[in-house]
Length: 522
Ligand code: ADP
Ligand code: ZN
Image 1 (cartoon, protein in one colour):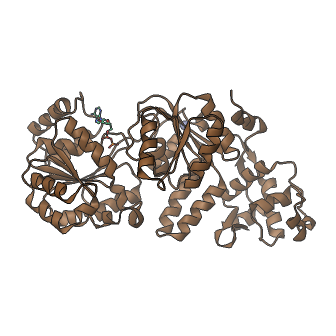
Image 2: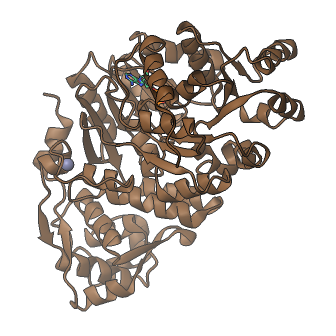
Image 3: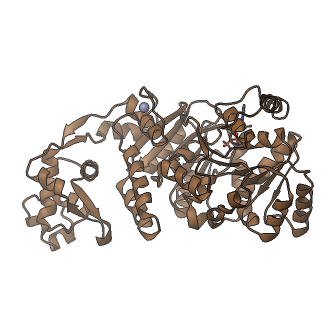
């Protein structure tokens, strides 16, 4: 790559100070800007809040011509443009919220070189009229914000993003800068391929957020845990992410019944109602929002002190993005993820119904590994984003309270032989009931009280067995047949355990004392 002229870089620093009011560049910003000034393509991966916008705004300001910013989020566009205008930068956006004549006026200004940064929605970009506008403008950079929309959400979310290949074809001399907070390798490669910028240099910023305390708990008695959690820190703001719209509403009702200042937010609500909830939250007029993943994109609230995941997210990118909404101000903030096998099963079912099954399943598996980690969670999380942490973090639940292990062979044999004796026809609930010798009616109707292992596991509670079976599934001794009502099947490895040919090391379940602590406010 050619070195950009040092004069331009000096000018970039002046603009950072004078236009944006910041003393120095953050990590990688200067390198990225320098790449753009050299006319080269770039893929910029920075966590949310890392300072991506400046990476394309400053090159636009330093040089002649203007920058085109493709952004999928209309609300974000508006905020960015307003912020730029406040700093004295001529910026505008084009999307469906403007009338035809408003749009034409902006297009005229853009072609006349009067707008330094123009934000457009992908829909707008794809129109023939706008293409002609672009051809007559002087572009110095094309930025593709939220570039992961090309890959992760693919067809459902932003079909237009999959058509952005034409940019490089039509404007081969204009540097393209793709920006995202999503960093896994598959997505990265996908972005580069689809934008036709395979030779672009990748800039990967650190994803470490040492001020976020990471915790994972079993999902049993979630609501009590959440209520206690909030009551321990009643003045702090937080977000609870739920899997479904319905559960945001029902959880809100339960929290409100406890006198907690909570409301819900999901994509099924009127825009005005949603805006109101968001506004109240940002103004500190509302402490707790129970939301689907629709909430938080582009919300700039620095003092969110905690984030809870009521359900398992579908992958580590989503998880990281969502917990990343806590502690933007750098102060200590807490995160809590509830983990249950039934969430995994539900997510698997969603995946089964859609496209790209293999990739999505692999991602879910990494998410699950994180939830079940028995070593530093932050290490695992960062390694997913391609970053190695030398020491354990000391600020996750595993570091603070390392799990104890136990020999699980006998327990595995009990469970596996029970599964075998039912001719592999039961799900985990029935299995546990057999092991614990339940008097459940359908169990008797099926004659399961007569099998040899009936009641052999009664020394352990239902929840403990849930934990054991989860561990056996993770170890690959058992598998779930999703296509057959989630019944359990013994794997080849499971057979070896049954014959005592392998060791089975599992983590100890949450003790009575630990559960009590979790459920009692202090
Ligand atoms: P992203 O798009 O990566 O989520 P933004 O571009 O919105 O992040 O930047 C996040 C915040 O950091 C903004 O408030 C921005 O003004 C601020 N910021 C960006 N660069 C710097 C810098 N060099 N010094 C101080 N603050 C910065
Ligand atoms: Zn740790």
